[in-house]
Structure formats: C-alpha cells, structure tokens
Length: 297
Image (cartoon, rainbow, N blue to C red; front, side):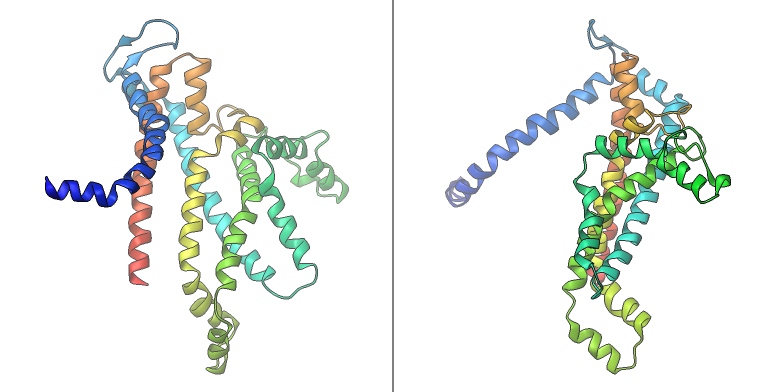
C-alpha cells in the first residue's frame, strides 16, 4: 500500500496528463471496435431490431467470393504500391540530392501531389484516363501509338493497375522526402573514406548509403503498406466504385457496399473483424522483422 501511495505521488501528474488521451482513445477507437465485434453476431439492417444469429455472418463472409476477391486485390494493392513507392522514392531522392539545375523545382513538383485530396486526385486522373477526351489516349494517338490505347478504367484486366499508378504518383513525393532526409544525414566523410579505399559509385551505394538509410526505409515501408491497406477506399470509390465487374473492388469498398447499399450491417462488421485480424497479423510481422533488423544493425 505504501509503495502504491509513493507511486501515485511520484507519477500522479504523468497519469493525469495521459488520462485525457486514454479516454479519447477508448471512446473513439476501443469502444467502436468492441461494438463492431458485438454487432457482427447479429442480423441487422441498421434500423429494425437486432436478431442474434451467432457466427452465421462469418459463415456468410467465408462463402462470399467477392469479399475474398476484394481481399486479394487489397493485398496486391498494398504490396505493389509499397514496393514501387519506396524504390522510386529512393531513386528520386538520390537524383535530387545531387547538385542539378532546377533542383528545387523538381523537388516541389514531386511533392505537390501529396497535397491533393484523394477525391481531387481521383477525379483528375479519371478525366486523364477517359477513353474519349482523356489526355493519355489522345497523346498516344498524337504520337501514332494507337496500339497502346486502352480503356484504362473500363478494362477489368488493367483497371486496378491504373488506380495503383495514381496512388504511387500521389505518395511518392512524401516517401522521397523521407529518403532525402536520411541521405542528407549521412556524413560526407564516409563517402570520401570509401573513395580513398577505391570504392566506386555502386560500391558506395550498396555499402554506405543503403545500410545508413535502412531505418528510414523500414519506417517508409511501414507507413506505405499500412496506408495502402486502409487508405485505398477513396481512390477506388472515386475512380471506379469497385467496377468494372468488381475487378477493382478492395475490402473497404465491399464492406461499405455491404453495410450501406445492401443494409447488411452485421455481415459488414464481420468482414471488418476479419480484415482487422489480417492487418493485425501483418502489422505484428512487420514490427517483429523491423525490430530484429534494428537490433542486428
């Protein structure tokens, strides 16, 4: 009891300062998750009385081919855009760290798409992809490359890839800034020492730059893959709404459609719980490997 009293006296101010954040987090994060889990065991259209059906919603979800197709698209979206963003961002950071002409202009123009809202970016690229008046197909016609003209958002084979390109375009500037910060923090003396030892450009890149920006790479990859899992709804909804024929459907768009358009709130919450578990597994694996990597470094 005496130790508890001493602890309260010693850390009481800290607990008081943290308490508002804990209360807000509990109200806006913990409670909705628990409520979502509770609703997932009921048949409910959002208006009438809830009916307990146990795990039937989960059985419906496991038989829902569109949901699993959407999950497959979500995983593909997350991994492709995460790898592409980081590889392109690292290349741009290396290029724009050099003393080239109009460097500030290129840095600014690369970062500019980050400032656009998802809706604006989605509508802008929807117009550019338009098969009739879109800039891309008209440009291909102008340079006599008609064979490359596509229905960028109407062809089920390439529609998802067209949206992934927009997501990469929008966020690559943000990740470039992260890599640029990491590269500029590397002491120039390390490169000079490597050159004195006879190291070439590629040797310096693989044995000096890459190891010293590894922490930045891990943070950048974690941010990109987490964002790709939970932030792809806006672009997909604005550009295709999940079509054509559900080819661009991701988990979030199908969950929203199931919950609102088809008034299956219980099933929608069951989907959300399954997606939460999948994302949690990926998050834990990422944290494990990132910590292991940092300890080895």
